[in-house]
Length: 345
Image (cartoon, rainbow, N blue to C red):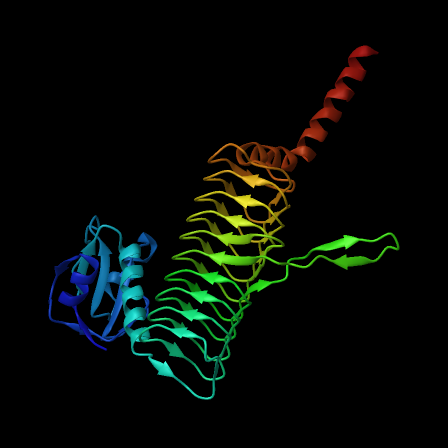
């Protein structure tokens, strides 16, 4: 597919500087782009490449002041990075819309309700009483269990497993290998030292506009629902335990684990490899630094924490700075002790 600068500017609401009829057919990094490709410049560190790039079109910030002539056609927008994201999203949708129909072999139970313009890839399994909304894309080797509901425009990538009774909203993206609705980790200790499994009778609800990265696991609730709320963005390789709730527009980076029944607020940011214990609450707007271990509730909104156990971000940084100075402080203490000993004699 080819697009002119004028068409692209209309999609992202930009202003053209240069040839509005020039066309591009693919994307490239500004430092590597070739003729016929589109690039963007958001980070000032890469500005030098703007004057040498072979890209036909470059999306730039409105505020950018040129230091020399540019061969490429520029499209100026308030935020080049966000505009580029919008353009990629639209391009992806156009590609996705071309994928329609049901490949063979597949298994689709006779009771499945199918919306318009859906795509089901080869070797997919769609269980009894499942519901697929309009424009849903089910890629090959996906498993959709009984009574699962998937909303309009959602995408289930290869190898995703969605267990029975789970609910997936609209515009959701589940990347390859993710498992939705596996059993929560619930076992009751017995008098003889063994553990008896507690049946996990709930489900998982993923609301609209959520994206979940590859090979993440979200466990079904013991009773009730594990809930990922509207607009949340979850990275690869996450463990979300039973009855957890993750708030609207919260982002969670890779390798994080959240234990059972913890409630995460809205607009929370959780760094990679963080660990959060069960049965606590994390207030709206909290920022949890990478590798932090959160062992108690955070009740004050917009708090930033770091460390294990996680403590106030600024105080923790000061403590780390003091720890680095301990050898110097020890030396000074010894010098003061020697001085005091000499004065006392």
